[in-house]
Length: 146
Image (cartoon, rainbow, N blue to C red; front, top):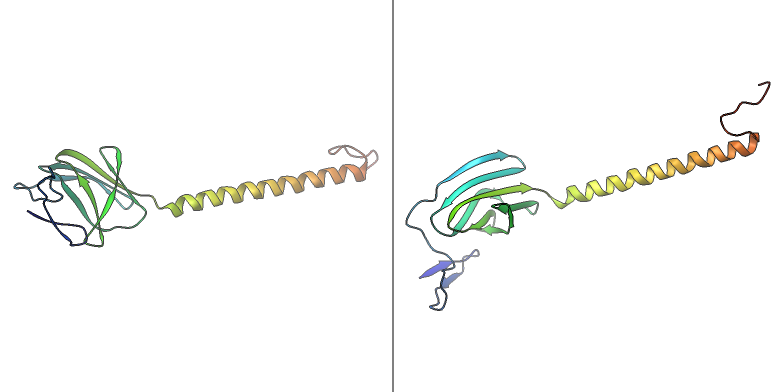
């Protein structure tokens, strides 16, 4: 038996291997699209045998996959498409787009806000201390006769 790898390499079945690397099923694998959004894609699949569920979209680094609620590795199919290995049986496959740049941007923004708040608070504290030392009276009290 001959199998084709992701890169088009022909792999011949070795007698000592129980499960083939790639095989074809005699029956179709029905699926149902549960949710389709720009950053999320959920599919219910009923696989008659182990195989790849291939999406018609490019494999970008920000996509993550879950198979029945557990993280799954996304493979590259034909050099460009996203695919997930799915065992035989009924399964839910979920793709979410969560690029690392989003998390980096949020972290940098939060750090920037904290630094700005610290500098603003520090400058405000310096101004209060210097106004107290000039007037001699505690801040918030007006001088008599003013």
